[in-house]
Amino acid sequence: MQVQHARQIANTLAYERTRRARYADYREMDAQVPELHRALMVLVDFIFGGKIDDGGTRVSFEVNTEKARPEVAKVIEDTTDILDLQRTIRDITREGIELGDSFTRFIYTQSALVGQIPLIPEDVEPMEIYGFVDRYVLSGSGGDFSGTGGGDLYPYEVLHYAPDRPRGARFGTSLWSSATKRWRIAEAVEDVLGVMALIEPRGRRRVFWPFPASGKAGADAAIWEWVRKIQAETEEDYFFDADGKLQKSVVPQLETADRFFPFKVWGEGMEGSKPFVVESPPADLKQLVDVLRFFQDSYFIATGVPAALCGYEANVNARSTVEQQGIHFALTVRNRQAQVAALLQDIYIRALLAAGIVPEKNEVQIVMPPPSNFDQEVKARVLQQRALAASQMASAGFPLSFVLRKTFDLSDSEAEAVLATADLPDVSAAPAPTPPNEPKDVAMESQVVRILTAVERVYLEMGAVRRDITEIRSP
Image 1 (spheres, one colour):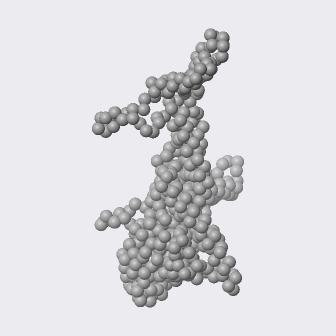
Image 2 (image 1 turned 135 degrees about the vertical axis):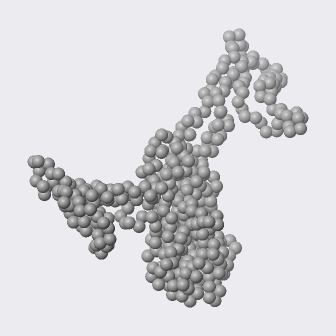
């Protein structure tokens, strides 16, 4: 048992070193890559929406406690205010999506959850036994997770948000994990581009000037004195400072002037030798710029955020494709909202248990805002296709209860309730016209098949297979 525990500690320390390096890379990417930073902010904004209450406070989510007991509703309201969850949940989500992990310590009294403290992800290590978290170990100096450093915390004291956690893993996955390699290569390309832009910003002439060869002492020194004089005349290194005084530059200027190279000519060859010029083309930076643009596009692919939403329109197709990209982005936002809703549900369950209240199923429901216009557009298009299918099926003579069940995904009881309360016209008496050479039953069957195929295609493309498209509720 001790040998197994020692191996676990060794593996933990080995992985911890790489985890710290990854966190450092992600923070550097956030600070230095505008595309990644903006994509993260856009994603978080879409997850929580932009609703503002009457007091000017940003509303990140809503809690439905209509079915809850009065004492449960009070605990939920107090917990939301004490922990400032409308703001805190944004910070937790942003940190978790950026780094892959976010740790928060909860402070309890004997009967309530009364506070929270953010923990540095590098300083927290979850310890598991048979796949279950046994405790959270806080590191001491130097990242010591041996249990003798910063102390241990019980699982209920720590909230660990690990988005996109692989199966069997203890830590989550950053939104930028697949872009790390591209970021390193792009950094190297940018360095090369900067150096070339500074050293070779334009074409330079190289002037080769003949000098007669001489064996006299000091002849070479005279040649180099001439070269230095030419350079002093073509590249001034003096400037006026803020006080108007003429100063000499200590740092050499960019080498943008013509360069002179003396060469020796022996004997009679000097008579036919003349200075000649070699034109040097400027540095070709276009290829490097194209490479950087490729990496810029790949950042948006890695994050899944449409580039047009981040203010980046590289071509005329950016706006035309944002509609289709937005449909898939809305589904991504909804999946993130489901994670956040589960996280909030976990927080409220802990607060209720700390107050001595056992929550009941569906007593507390977390409602997330719709993902802006994209989600509304998906809903409108789906409803339009459903209404078209229902109209044509009803015109073809199908019973209205069957139409409602198949096109609007209603249960038998829901369909009967709609028929009992709604004043629907009887369209079954006016069936669709049948072509003269086509039997009525064949025409009806082919029409229904086409309708259902179209509706199914819309469902698959948009992922809108349920009616609750505008909200995420807890299980």
